Image 1: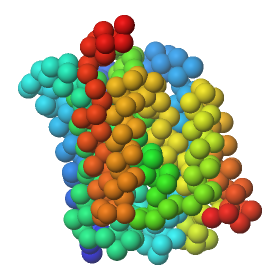
Image 2: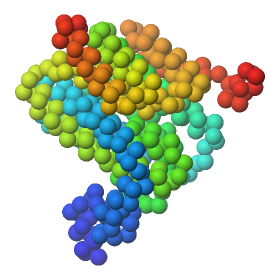
Image 3: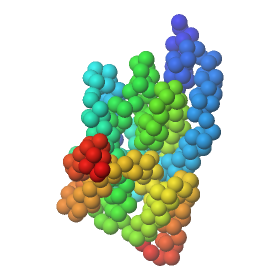
Image 4: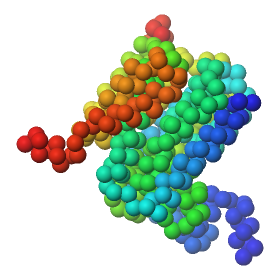
Length: 103
Length: 260
């Protein structure tokens, strides 16, 4: 039952957040510094999500295979390799390490 | 008039485009001209990213049903929430035994970034309330990041709608596929798909991270989140990362002066 409430609340809340941006910009014209702050806030949240979902599963260390796989993929993204290659390499590395018995 | 209403009932998706272009028959033409506006290079990027979204959506569906949840849960979740990070966060908090509040708060904190996305993209929805109501649901990291990089309003609009629609389709189809497979096999860990989520989220912000202030804020925020993980309930460390914004230093012009 909790599950259904969570699903509904997250759906309604997310939709409200999505509509709020355009509606807000219709009424108020935010200064550039504030807009930049919001842009940076989004980047910070996303990057924190990248890092935590790389290292952590629930409340514990996610394991070396995921960490190394994401590391390989991230390196390829940073050196401007095609995204498909970066993803394929990341997933294959993680899967390969697990196949070798590394968690 | 009644025919118009009949159409809306039959096909809300096409109705969005018909509002945009002023006629039902103009739908394929509008799509074709949008595709031409975007061009093959970025369309290619979109399709590749969709493979990535498919991997993440697939693992979402599979993780949910492999954990014993009924088939419809991940499927409805993906359709009504349509935000990968938040869905994973809510699901992992619930599966770890977290409360209603922890699961909801975590997911909504993650999705708070939709607000700045919407602010930055408001021109994409302008002109029609229907466009806003449907379009808002299509705001995700991928199409927001790609559209925000464009200056030309026509290109912004085309990229936002086409990419958003593509991701929505991919996300939901792959969730259904993952849910079915998860129910059948039990665990998908050996496939290594969990490496896809961080990479999909990283790719669109890498250009922004090459800028000094954003990078400083992001690195310090992420460090805070990691350090806080053992002490805070699941999900809250990500909220804490916002403190990194206070460490990003002076404005770009001021720091340039300081360096020279």
